[in-house]
Length: 151
Ligand code: DQA
Image (cartoon, rainbow, N blue to C red; front, side):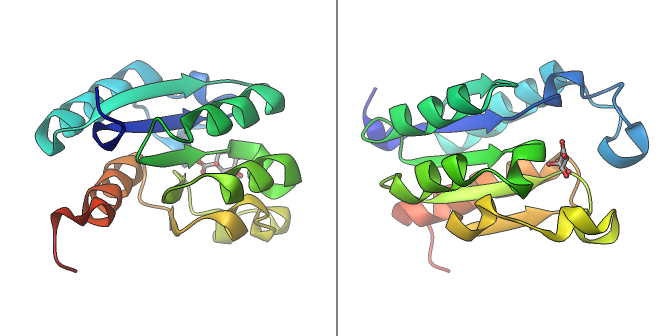
């Protein structure tokens, strides 16, 4: 696989519980179903996907660092770490390609602490409140950033 064909999709803590976790915010689609949707979209766009979910900050940092030089872009939902992880923000800033940060829920209309978006400061694009479709929109952004479309 050429690096130009590969994207890395990263989910942070408790996103493995999608489908049953706070469905009023995150909907009823499970993470497995989300991965299938991401795979289908990737096939349409001609991407290969590396998918990582971890509850552990250091593993997320390592996943971002490992994507450098091997993935053309990253889609990341750092979940709760979005609000305070400088380590993840630094890793995103060091990545040598576009990073799109996704939040399933409308973070701005929830608790005030969710307005503090630390990792997003290192994101090239930010999508929140589009539900799980946000991941698919993020993939479109990477597709366009890879020079596949005039914008
Ligand atoms: C989330 C929003 C975060 O505030 C929260 O901690 C999550 C999920 C989202 O996708 O809406 O775990 O990132």
